[in-house]
Amino acid sequence: MTQEPKVRYSDEELEEFKQIINEKIEQAQRQLELIESAYRNDQNNGTDDTSPTFKAFDEGSQVMSKETASQLAIRQEKFIRDLKNALIRIENKTYGICRVTKRLINKERLKLVPHATLSIEAKNMQQ
Image 1 (cartoon, rainbow, N blue to C red):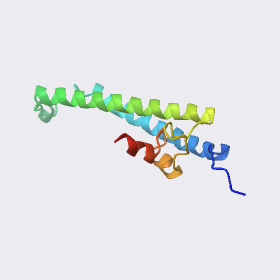
Image 2: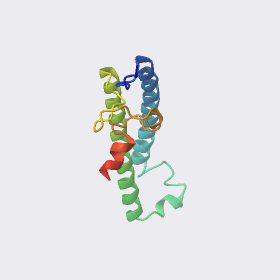
Image 3: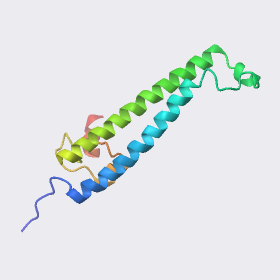
């Protein structure tokens, strides 16, 4: 008797992924807070009178750092949103299923990229 291919991850496996994702969300939110606080403090980090080096930055570099911080924040917010969407897929028991091939995404890939919705095979087909 041949064994049916697995169509979804078990509840235990989903719980394991849920823990990984929740940890990643916490880390990502801490990083987002750091990015946002760096962005807010960019103009004045309390050392204006004591350190002339901060005044040495020209307008261009200040604008660039604000743009960079803004881009980083946007990317971090998208990452958090993707992770939260992965939690919804866990609740729906559709987590880890490739949206192209409809087969299970490799467990190791999901541990590295827990918000993945494509298998490596499907990702390579896109290129």
